[in-house]
Image (cartoon, rainbow, N blue to C red; front, side, top):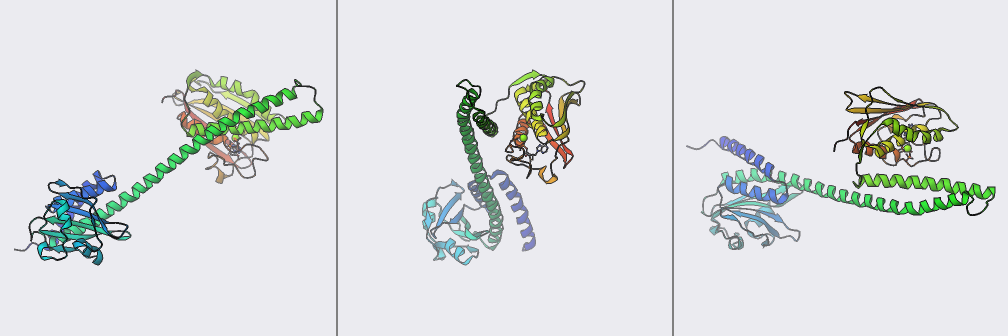
Length: 418
Ligand SMILES: Nc1ncnc2c1ncn2[C@@H]1O[C@H](COP(=O)(O)OP(=O)(O)OP(=O)(O)O)[C@@H](O)[C@H]1O
Ligand SMILES: [Mg+2]
């Protein structure tokens, strides 16, 4: 009695699907896909050997991998000439071929048998087709003549199709991974370069500032009013250059992962006291009220004080810079059972247009027209603040209305844990 062909077909599909699920589970690289696929073909078809040939750039074929029941035989360096053997015919015509008895087929090439160590009696060979076309063949061989037929060819064709899809996906994935690794490496080099350059630039600028201070203080002789004016301009500009370089250094150090967290216990009240005068100097000449409030129950923090100070100074300095009148209110309060604190910086300044809200935390992003000629700065403050907040496992968000003001909220764990 003959078996129902559709039943054979669906049984094959179930077996293939199950085997491919296993293949997907183990294979991470193209070589692994090839090796697993070959083992799969040999096992499913009870073949004595299976091979995957991939087309080489010079037009011949390269034996990519070769698996026999006695174990894998390395025939990686064996090359077949273009059109040589049954595989050559399959690639040329693009059609699957089964040869029940190779001794009767004049196309059969014995070179593979000799190197691979298996005397094939019958072979089945199908094209290995990926997106760009046929790139090789998938072949199985059995020692006994007459042991492979059309049914095997059908199964092998289905297998080759599925393996090709997996191989293609694996190749694309590995290309993406390579690209990702290269980008990461380039980014590290860039961060390292920035860190070194900004560090090296700081010393001469500090010397310039020191000497300008000496001159202005009259320690090197009396100066005329015009000379003093000119020195003040030089001093102001050197100060801005120093700020920029320090910001770049901070950012590149964070990106290069060179920041160390130093945990200490402190009160936010103290951080405010240390910073307040600088903010007030920044507000001189403006009608802006500045206030600080630590709400009841605000616990002391056990985290990196210097970083918290830098975060607050960047956010509050922005409020100072972008507010011409009204008020700036800084409030700190505990959240939940006190395991988190929130610091809110609310100003009645120029506000930030909606379309800029998603990008202002990126380096060098400034609202057009707001800087640098009008307000100074280069657009690094917020990106540094956000990276520092990340380092301390906190969060920072902003709400703003153009022309009415902005509110930045920083949430930090009360106790830093690595
Ligand atoms: N409180 C605020 N009010 C209005 N706009 C703000 C406020 N804070 C930030 N911005 C906008 O976000 C941009 C980015 O801020 P960021 O602090 O990163 O840069 P900067 O202040 O321009 O320069 P830097 O901080 O490097 O001196 C600013 O240029 C400004 O357009
Ligand atoms: Mg800023």
